[in-house]
Length: 232
Image: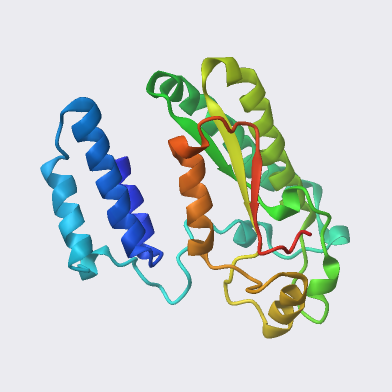
């Protein structure tokens, strides 16, 4: 279930205490508000976390765990090399997917008091800082900026449309995520950031959990940035 998946995600990010705290908060809610106990499967899952069961570890493939690699589809084309076919395909796959997935999920979310958190990027609101790519084969593809700005605006549209029905819609915009980038890029990026520079996936989990939880009950239509100050 969702609670089990949340606990696993926190555990795999190294946040073992938060994974256990999440279970106990959920258990207390069930007991105090509903007079129920957690399922046997969920109690066993807590036990696996307490034992640091190796089966909970994320599968490894020699690369950081990434559920979806947008850059593999976009590539690293510079502005003048982008074709009509490439641009239309990437926009259709990614921006269309965001819209139609939200559209399909909304009837269920309205019934269950759920909410939407779309994954955007700092480059959905920030003009590209091309200087950080100098001396590397990397760039900021124009399609990426268009996709992520579209995700943010779609999120705001849904938030406005459904705010009287109690459906919250927010987006989360991480800064750069470590994924084997060249050292020259990491140093240039770090000079524009705060204490850390490029982030690890676990660095944005807290903000995601906050947006999904009742602690953000009156936040909707917002784009939350987690980037160690890079966009300042």
